[in-house]
Length: 169
Image 1 (cartoon, helix red, strand yellow):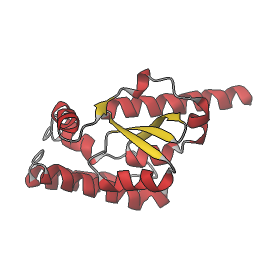
Image 2 (cartoon, helix red, strand yellow):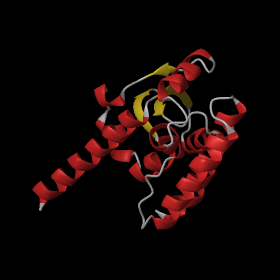
Image 3 (tube, rainbow, N blue to C red):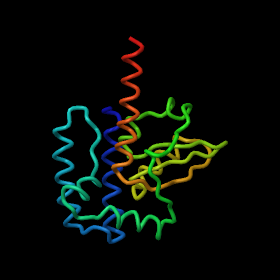
Image 4 (cartoon, rainbow, N blue to C red):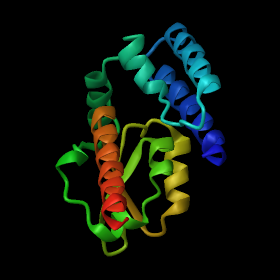
């Protein structure tokens, strides 16, 4: 998990910069959220499910997630998806590293020939897109996803894995 810390830091830092650059949050709001993010990061004992975006939306209420989704659709040309409603192929689930998904707030949800479909709450972070583009060979089709849907999906996957492990023992 510690090896993902630089990715988490870079992903969140570049996300914040993109949000300010596009006028979606103020620099003051970003500074306050960054301060809280760093506080949580310093207190995190191996837990790396931290999200600057969550702080901006939920704690600081500096950004409406609906406004961000609208921006991603209208300005970036993305579709919005709720991965909780997707039937993700087992061969994709089994090879997906959930720690990387948490670190980037991104989940692969489909694979058709050499094209992978990714749902992300962090599309605005160039570090997240670069990470997945380097990790995956072939084409990527990006979809925006609200934080809650990514969280619910990953937590459900973890619960199913834990249940399977209990049954196996």
